[in-house]
Length: 424
Ligand code: GDP
Ligand code: IMO
Ligand code: MG
Picture 1: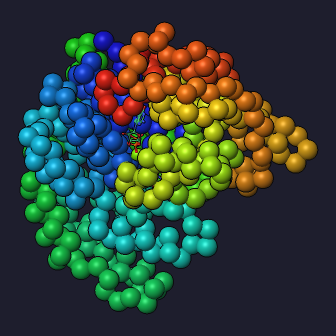
Picture 2 (picture 1 turned 90 degrees about the vertical axis):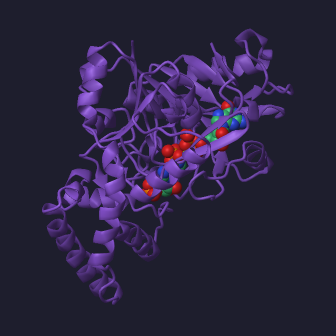
């Protein structure tokens, strides 16, 4: 029995979907704790590719129960469309997929507001337009609508009317658009969709408590990554939730004393989608090599991901703020073929060398990477199953990552498929 968190250790897209799917076969329950349909988690099984935005990545295992915790902002459109895609592949998770009644709902107006705000920003964040910021904004402003509120026939029309009046006033004042959002349209759409969704609704905190008391293994699935955390990330170029391990307790209703370990999912290099500082970003042929060989295209928005070398300052920071006990090091196969591989071990800032990450975008923008250089390897490692069969230079790279990141590597991922994983 174990209670584990799998958290993205960089800027998202580290391969969490793959690793969570891999670990799900040994887990009874897999729970998402934050974020929304901005997540794009890819699971590849025998050449079949599933991209999950709302539904936890454990869903492809028939014996695993999946749950969406209260900390998630629930996108009903995305949820229903993912269920349809799964059903087309012969997967029907009814009876083993649940949604917290206390999750806030992303309403159609949240997506419109997301787009309008982003368009009016001078310093664009590059959001996914999934309504994440505005939905969390309403939650914190105490005017949000939760799953349980929609299921309450008397309360829902009142709270929806209040919200729509407010959003319409805002749109008229800011963008001179009158009656932008139509109450009846949104009201009827929600009633129809939630009539279908209500069978999935169940108290997730109680489910977790029961599983824990029965000594069953529980895995928490992070979305986005540490540097997109609203508190610990590269603010303001972040998402609107606590992506770090701390978000698990508030986002699901488990107590911190019950968590055994935290697995950091970390790419063997670094990527970022959207705007914001990125000290090790590459604009040369190595950056292009990583982008092409790693197929670095966003799973949610289709935007190209920016690519760069591994950053040990980010790694140590992530280990610290998440309490990471071991790493799943992914996409190391992508580095194969490079003559030399650089690892960032310091930041040159003005006249100093910084040895620790500073989560301040204005400082990071002015930092230059200080690199150590390692020898690369030419072999294709994607079919290797045993750690000791990896080329010497690959093992040396992993040893070096462990040393500079201050954490052991537990899983080495050498390809997108479940079986392309080596337990060290
Ligand atoms: P997530 O958001 O953290 O779940 O990551 P994404 O699914 O957005 O992006 C990771 C991409 O890398 C996906 O296309 C995966 O199929 C792929 N992938 C995951 N692990 C590996 C690996 O070890 N090697 C390679 N080559 N691809 C991988
Ligand atoms: P997964 O779970 C990578 C980025 C967006 C943008 C910023 C804010 O697949 O790793 P938002 O729509 O959340 O308000 O956008 O966060 N972002 C992600 N980048 N992977 C993700 O999720 C992301 N989710 C959001 O690109 O820069
Ligand atoms: Mg992703």
